[in-house]
Image 1: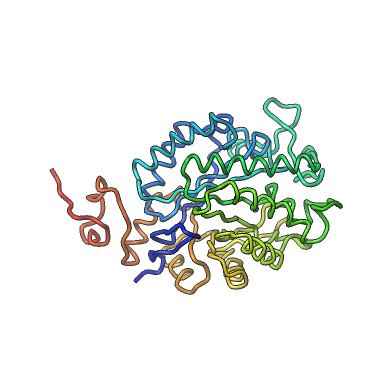
Image 2: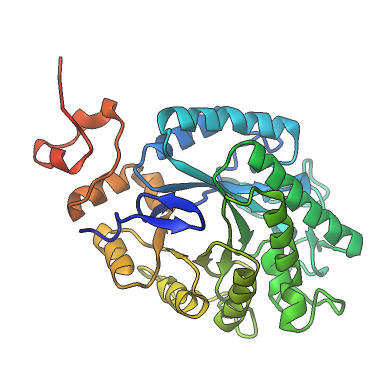
Length: 372
C-alpha cells in the first residue's frame, strides 16, 4: 500500500492522504478581497486530489500585506469575498479539508508583485506604506527602513492575528497555519539578523521567540478548540549567525507545549545573503530532524516533484506529509497521476472519471465510466 496515500491527522483533523497544497500567493486581491481569479485558481486546486488545501498567505491587517494585491482577512469585505470563494470550493469538493495561512509581512510589506520585480515600493510612490519590523533595519540596503514596533504596536499585531482567527472560524475553515517563516514579521522577530531589540522581545533566544508564542496563544484561544492550529517555520536562515535548526527545535518544543498541532518546515527568506543549496528535496533533512526532536506531525516542502520521491519521504519517516506548490501550479492533477503511479486511490469528481486511461480506471473511486 502507498504510504503517501495513507490517512493521517493534524490534531483532530483527519486527512485522507499526505499530499498538501502549499499556500501560494496569487497577488490578485483587491484591498485584501479575493475576486474571480481566486474562484478559478482555488476551484481547480480543490479537485486536485490532495488531502489538505492551505489558502495562500493571508494578511491579518492591511499593513501586513506583502503586496497591495495580497489576500487579507481584516475587514468585512475580505470575509464576504472569502465566503464566496469557499462556497465554490465546498461545492466542487465537499469533503476537502481547507485551512488558511495567516501572516504579517513585516519589513517585506509594501512590495511589488513578483512579475513587476518584487521590490519594495518606494514610500514616495502611489500605493506604498511604511512597513513594520522588530527593528528599523531594511531587508535590502536600498529599501526604506521599516518602523520598529513599540509595545503598543506589538499588542496590535497580536490582536490582529486573533481577530483574523475569529473571522476564519466564522468562515468554517478547518485549520490555521501561522506563518513564522520566509522572512516575514514573526520570522524577523526570531532571527538575530533582523531583530536587534534590547527589550523583552529581543536579545537571547527566549525573548526572540516571545512574539511567536504570544501570537500562537492568541490565535489558539480565538479559534475553535476542535480545529488545529500549527505553524510554518524557516528551519534556518542559511546565513552564518542567523536562525538555525537548533533554535527551531526549541521553538517547536515550546509550541508543542502550547497545543500546536504540527510544523510545516521550510527555510530561508530573512536575508538576501542566504546561500541555499538548492536541489530535489533540499529541505527534507531539516523536516526529518525537527520531526525527530520535536515529535509533532511534520510537513516537508521544497522541490518535491516526483511521486516516487514523495512516497520515499513518507515511507522512510522523514516527514508525515509533503506539500507541493509550483508543481501543483504546473500540474493541478499531480495527485491523480501520483495515485496511478503508486497503485493508490484518490477521490476524483465523477464528471472527470472518463478522462483517465482505461487501464488505470480501477485506481480511482469510480463506479462506472458511462458514455453517451
